[in-house]
Image (cartoon, rainbow, N blue to C red; front, side):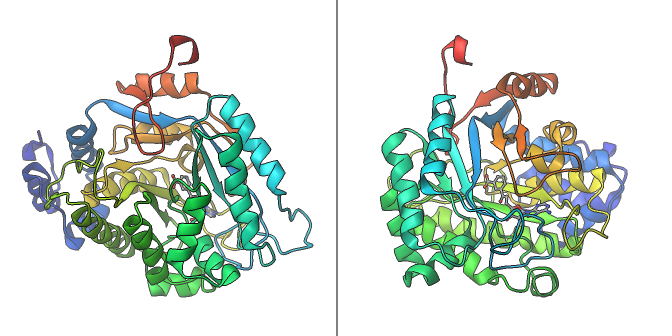
Length: 394
Ligand code: V47
């Protein structure tokens, strides 16, 4: 329970009262949270909501990220991953290589592959379908979470199909769910300054709305700590919860406005919704925005906590340790986050100074880190179903 007496910043009282009463926060509440120096109150409020939803459970998964190409038609200023074709370091993996990596991951106990890449100008639609079919054939149990909304829009042009048709074809070939990338900040000012060539937010939402209509679950990200301001971050989060509200209604879930985990579980409607929000901490190194300082630890913690508080109807908030760093991701587990993503193994999109693409977090270390926070480590699959393993494999 929240004790208003412990919250010295009275500007937070309206938000705290809503959190206590289980009501959603407004744009003004979100901006007041960012403006406040009462950081313990913000953390405490987020922890109250996180515990109401998940008690002491803290989720992780065994996964393997695969970035099949870094060749990209776009040149987003925040991105240090993309290369132009022929440029030094540009690569595209043959389908067999992607399938082989997925096979190795499955053998090592992974339940998920997370596959994303640049917008490659010449790869044909068959490349993507064959990748999914190949993995499905070799590893029938492995969940394939693949392609950001931006890649899906790119594929509509490659295949000359609609968003719905592309998603249906990918699903039939083995796609299990959509990751949350490519969202950045849903705001035209920020879009035009930092990722002008990318489709606007309406397309990102159309992809996720259509996926939900087709029963494909998805995630959502927010890239923060570059040129956006707190009001723009809050606007982004409110747009996410608005789509979630529609998707939950279509699933027949009367979540109302309550600040509790929507009872998603097994549903018979054939529809889907967002599972998780992942706030991504901007890493300036090697990008065109390398002159920016990047978010501070306090901005990281506040953003993770405020995301939990603002997005009352999406059940999980992930502290993606690759972006926030392991130390801060651990702290975030007491600041509203209930998930750490997973073992990852290989990650090419962002690398902190001195790090290569091998970025791996071993299960034993994940569990130790969660236990130290007082949390209970729970291995999950992509759709947050709990996984029990024989002790020898735990
Ligand atoms: O869309 C690119 C971001 C995203 C930088 O769905 C950067 O479970 C920080 O979406 N600094 C890809 N971020 C990663 C992503 C993701 C990660 C983990 C889990 C899930 C999920 C999704 O990475 C891109 C972009 O927003 N990004 N460059 C950078 N310099």
